[in-house]
Image 1 (cartoon, helix red, strand yellow):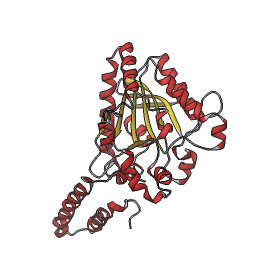
Image 2: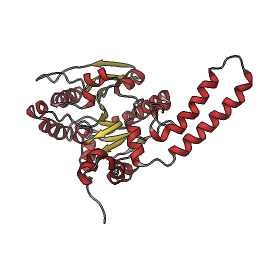
Image 3: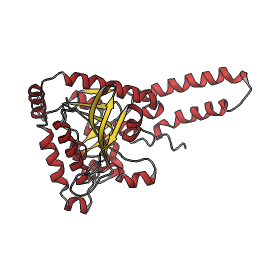
Image 4: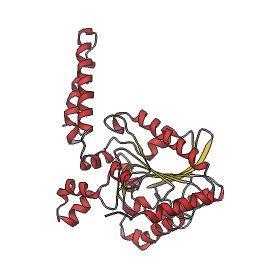
Length: 316
């Protein structure tokens, strides 16, 4: 089993392994047609598998070990980035990355959650789970953006806010609630993008925005499928059943008007073509920054409030 592929991707992994083995054979032009045939077969198989993914499989893709993280996108799509540190009260939270970014001629305040890829990085960034100082750092940067009339762009990728004793002692719930309160009235445009996993209040604390976008195979939910299954069924192994009930994928969220835009992913997911994914994300950010820059502040706030007050309404 190839650990870089999920369970449902293993048939693709087998074909890719055969292709790589043949490509390693040098000075044999006779195998070129066979390689082309295997590549065509791999593409067709990938299209077939990804055309009928379950909500649980999409949840697994959102956490794929090869999926790009915030720091990967910063390096790939920003022309300039100056990181800013600390909440000016307790510490600098490495799970929350923030600073002034630039794409082309447009500058904006950027805030994003970073999970980490290696064990060392995961520990350094606390697996993307921010503490209160992370959310207070984010709010400090948002207030700075408002002061200097800069739009705000946030990347959401977290299993949730850190639930440790120290975090609770320092006011985790207050920090999240404060961000929601302040973001609802910030007099500057806010664009939020779910790039992987959007978990609970830890995601929402930097996700209250004028425009919310998400990658095709990302998720956004009040609780993880495993957590939901543990509560409802007393069995975390029933996460696949819970995922279907949570409606946490992009198509469900778009249908329920909880996100405005879905950013398409390359065939097979972001990890199969990172360069294309970066181009798609950069294009989406540029388009939305241009759109929100034309909206007067008073209208922006009215539309934001209308959007927020509309959540939870439904027709029987």
